[in-house]
Length: 103
Image (cartoon, rainbow, N blue to C red; front, side, top):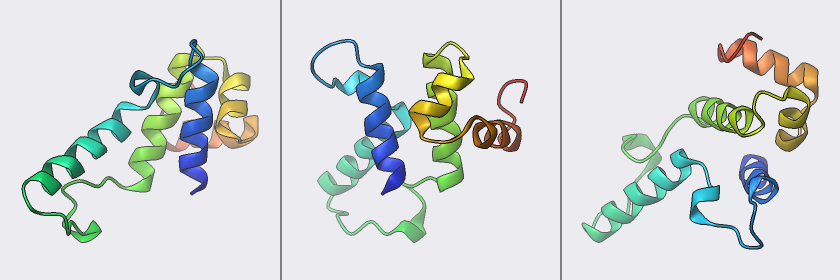
């Protein structure tokens, strides 16, 4: 739940208009929604997390989200950490863990 809150908060902070746009959301989230929609339309509404088709690991989602926010802030780590709701030290550890930038 916290991750979803961070995604929405990031989208709101990064949005330049008064409305949250689809383009404000991370592509991995939009891709996941498309996959679920396709499966539902195909009569496979009972998709389970175990099949892996429409799901990514939390680690993959976190890495992509951090990369996207870092890109949106043009590498500003202080802003990135604030948007993500983590300390700069916590962000540094995540950057190192995911091999993002010059951690």
